[in-house]
Image 1 (cartoon, rainbow, N blue to C red):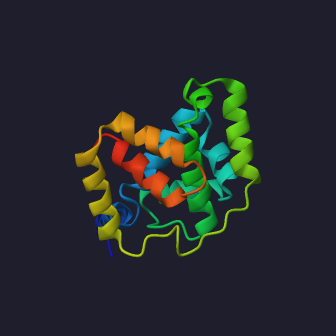
Image 2 (image 1 turned 90 degrees about the vertical axis):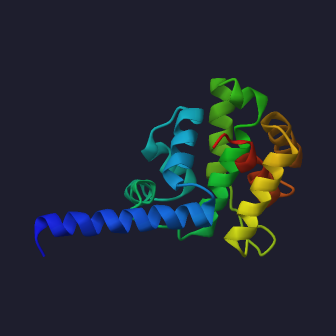
Length: 165
């Protein structure tokens, strides 16, 4: 295989992985991770440490070199951080609130059960589309915030629906 052929093959793999991420997670993981890096004003390596994943692995997932996060606890921590962005002090980027949120997630020991993992990606996509038709982004964010840690899957779906396409 020539260098050019290898690059084309690599590009195809990345595109396939990004398509799988859209199907499984609603959007490419690189977009979600970049949002967290900006929201919490941390480096990608610092975020990886908080999530409990190696920095190179996170980089591979973000770039589409890998399709999925294999450890469900890492995905659960990422979702926890996404919800913490809704905390007013975190949203206001108060340093003590940012540090507390990151430390809370770093110390967490999430478990994943059938109740918090979607069984069909199409169902999640349909739910997100329906929520977008029913409510405006502000209402969806408020609803996600109100759910807190009690219903993490619903909170995450509401946040996805609130996000502009």
